[in-house]
Amino acid sequence: MAITSERLSQTFSEGGAQDIYREVRATGDFLGFARRYVFDSDYRVARSALWGLTKAKDNELPELQVIRNELIDQAMQTENSSVRRLTLNIIERLKMDKDDLRTDFLDFCYEHMVSIEEFPGIQTLCMKLAYRMCSFYPELMDELKRTLEAMEIDYYKPAVKCLRKRILSGKFK
Image (cartoon, rainbow, N blue to C red; front, side, top):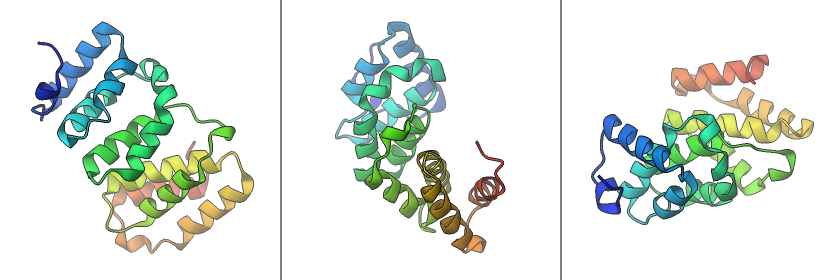
């Protein structure tokens, strides 16, 4: 069955996401698929496309590097938490260099990693991404550690507490 917006808007299962991934892998056109569906205005289409892409192996994702900034923009602008989490998952798996620092995205990550109203999956992805961006700059790493230390940890879920502890102890890479 061909991948279409209609099909993606009706994909709600792990198996469906795996099927989407296998079909995209067979074509070898991860970038074309992403450009066609990941930024769709229908959040169900975007969510299913992103969900399928999260099944890709790390060595299959580098071609998405050219749309990293568009993915970052989507993560920061979407109102849909599933689209946000899946987009952050893809961004977290892409290469990030010292020259790639976007202060607006770093601010976004700080805001969402400490927000107790945010879902734990988004909090932890934002924490990982903030760590990666800050790791290039000692002064930013100091700021990240101060922010993590200031968190009222009792209000967070175990995944957030664990990642925070790993970062502060130097055991996260």
